[in-house]
Image (cartoon, one colour):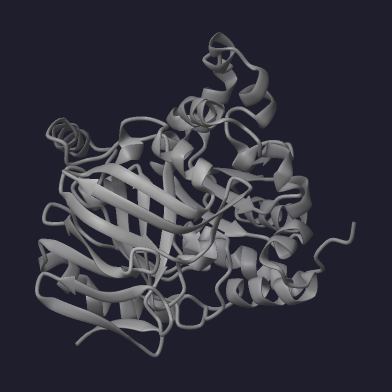
Length: 397
């Protein structure tokens, strides 16, 4: 199988952005987990070298191809493991995650079919077992990037060379220009108590309105510190403060399955009705994982005008300038407190969880609506201030 060919100079630029911009540099005190499949090894190897050169300790974590993003268990355990086996995670696994100070995940799979075909119960069981380790890594400094692979190019329906050129081009572009556009919107997010989203659902033949309470959260700006490439401004709504309906038209590839044409109805923050043109069974499995997966954990605006091609991978589709996405599942703790690891932060988060504002879940699945011409999006308002898309950026009217 022919693999992607990426110039070593580009690999060096890419790895440099991840280590220096995204992770804020590496010191001798850092133990950096570098995680990915064998097929993304060229970038992992370059990252390992960068960490060593800066005096840090690399923890290279190669994951098997039947494991979706290096979860604590593979698809084999999901299919055949008993509840007792699923709950018996080796102690060294926790120690490994606890010991790292920074985390880089290189997405890209050899064969996504290797971890598809699980039932809704099996998908949920693997996600629940992995939840503590997901929560550990997101409390550290982390970044996720995507390396081009033949299976991903095939999934997108384009040639490997064309796909590689797009991914590498986006991943070797200086992210600093994104920050300026996002900072112009940040005060409006911070001062608003609600965000209202109006979309149109073709099969229902009418406009849908979803209102989200964001009065207790704060905005997060994304310009390459968590995802790379990047470009979004997001926040977490109150879990019990979302009401109405929404339609999301753009395709997202999740766990080996395409999700597209998603309809959600929420009452008092809970998803009470859901449907999809594609991936209906997988959507049902996601929503049915736990109590928190019946609520939303994020609302965001895509802010990257240079990413004008819609790919199915969530790392890319959610960043397209002029899109909006929501996430089914876990909220982002840093949207509610400045330091989630501090005693004060932990206490406030616990209080917010108890009153139904902070959402916890084993899931966090982004789904995307297109507000560019021809998409399902109609209007977005922060309180009474309408936002529109101009030149691939969201701006106030």
